Amino acid sequence: MRATGHILLISCYELGHQPFHLASLLAILQETGYQPLAIDTAVEDLADDVIRQAHFVGISVPMHTALRLGEQLARRIRTINPRAHICFYGLYALLNADHLLENTIDSAIGGEYEVPLLSLVTALESNEHPSLAGVYTVQHSSEAWLQRTPFRVPARQQLPSLQHYARLQWHDELRLAGYTEATRGCKHTCLHCPITPVYKGRFFAIPSTIVLADIRNQVERGARHITFGDPDFWNGPTHALRITQAMHQEFPEVTFDATIKIEHLLKHRQLLPALKETGCAFIVSAVESLHNTVLHHLDKGHTQADIVEVFDLLAQVGISLRPSLLPFTPWETLESYLHMLTFFEQYHLIEHLDPVHLSIRLLIPPGSALLDTPGSHAWLEDLDAAAYTYRWHHPDPRMDRLQTRVAKVVEAAERTNADTVETFFQVMALAYATQGIDFSVTDALTRYGPHKILPHLTESWFC
Ligand code: SF4
Image 1: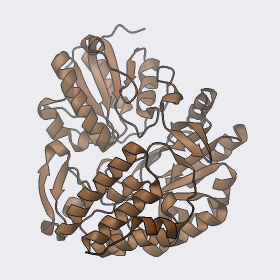
Image 2: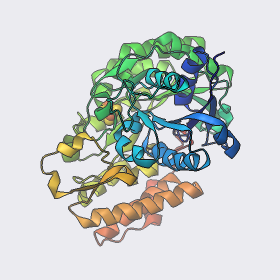
Image 3: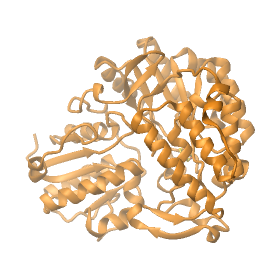
């Protein structure tokens, strides 16, 4: 075992999953002889004593919420242990590095983080001043590290058990759920997506033997469902299919979900029956909007007609589609927002939604491809570095007010675990009220009739 100072790895939030981005890093550090301590503050306490003993603290920031929580935590660590080196790693670390490096952290690593982070730990151990490829510091700027990682089977022994995390709601039953990734990055470059400025259209496949070993480890620990958290599971459809077929052969009772782009679901529609046969419980897809103008501005590669077709195709094979939405952008109008709500009501698709998605407002992080959008001067404002986004306003001020009201309603509903369909109609009432039209939630609920329980995870997912 290597003589080393204490290495503390922290995850603050990974969408309700046991943190993959701790497990992946733990595997590589342990193989090299280090013995890091891993804490998931989403479900565990982090004691001051543990912070005091750390020489190196790596905080995983794979999404916006994790970054917000991670910055609060880094400030606490800085106060308790000013000498510890604090490194943010993951998708959001580099986008906001300039702000974070001012006084919160010492380094940031984006893209394929394992190798540069290992180099950083080794350099610090030798008291070298880190000036390393892939490691962004005040003295040394660096791009995201986009070289293939020597992937290892994620080391999960140290992490809290799956009982602490989101479960699959499967009819009346709650099933323990695991999480893995078969690819990283994305070959698409949707303009609003934080993956675009980091991965620039590249993605990396994780060897299927590693993915399957990770699944096996989690099934042995009780998982009966696996979430494939790839940005897009069908960036490499053959790779994905090989993995789900092998998983189904070994664990026929284990179900799964994955995120797949509308364009890919249409292009590879012949593979949909195989998805169902291998245990797919539901598919998440970044629908974003039903307004073709918005979809064009985001460069999503699909249209409203494509979305309708995918809902139909998946219904035919018996898989439910859970759309993620981005309804508050500069291009969505009050009319198109109402049109979107009416679509979900008319096609009886409300239960496919997670109400938080009705409130999501566009984030424009530093480096976002949207900053170059022609005409953006009409809505784009200054960077709010502390909020990790450029400010923007909707050309129709009613939309900004509506977003604030919708966010309050869905947050309250989330806290009280309120009925999805009722929350949906409360949002619809707000949207109609913005137009000066009365809308009865009670009448709408009666009109809608009985509610379905569709397979979904018990924690809402949003970045
Ligand atoms: S939104 Fe989805 S398809 Fe588009 S770049 Fe991001 S991950 Fe890829």
